[in-house]
Image: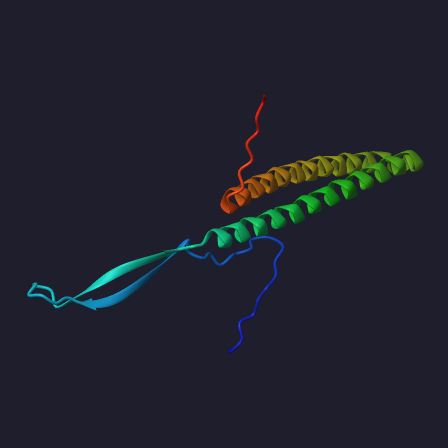
Length: 143
């Protein structure tokens, strides 16, 4: 199979991790009467500040999208809970079933809202790291 297939899954995304530092080995010959005929020297190349800034901005955008997804889930589950509450009043024969579904939907809405709140704080952390990577530091003075 010559082509790689990329499967998009809802959960368990595996990201290709890039190393923070790239190590380059070069062979050098020693001269000058030492016991060594050849050896290796290691050169370390670090990521630039702009690469780190872009990485953190991308992470901030990622968390912003997840935050919005959590918000939409909370709204949808809340709307479904209200619908089930209405159905419980409208259909007294199956009221117990509708009340159970209403409570489940309300629990899902609360969980989704909590997820949105969590992602909001992750987004704030990513924004702060991006500002630190770019050299922007906000100092808050009280007086």
